Length: 266
Image (cartoon, rainbow, N blue to C red; front, side):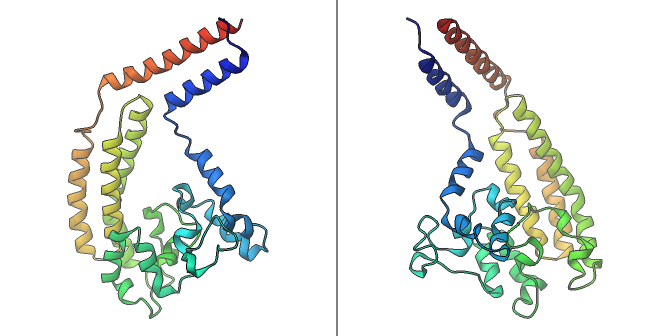
């Protein structure tokens, strides 16, 4: 029995969805943005009020699906209640509330920050999370944020430079393993365990900086480097040749089915 063109298209689409595991984060993110009333409203307002949305769209928060309500509260799906306190709307947080707000997700960072010189100066002119990371165009955490321009806005760069130097080797190791994961994934290797391990170590490493304790950072960097060396062995990760063979087999199966469907249509 010959397939109609529409039936062939449906079968092909179903096959592609099965083989890709329904992983379409960018399309889903775009769809989510279409229904967030805060975004639709603010983009229609003058520059001062629309700029935050444009900055957020380029942020690491946007990339990971963190939207307006995660920080400001309110109902992002109902324009009538978007700014209703009964729906949790908080508006713009006061500076002293920012560490606790960000700490709701970044608990390790907040723990170190609160005990640091920065944390002890909270409410007395000291920096908060947004001082270095920004409020809407939040960038991915990296050592690039520790620089002379940022630090000398409040004090000299000397201590920050020492801390950055102590962290350079570990950061390089993190980046090397991250690149290795990309290569493994391109070869059809399952890297979930390795990715989770690297994510945990990176978070622990970046959180530790916020203590501003040079000796602690140097000592902990050595421990993390040892763990990264063990992690780099990919021990316990599902990295067998079978995985790669299955990935190749799936691609060949898709090609074969597509060929049969096309032949049926001819």
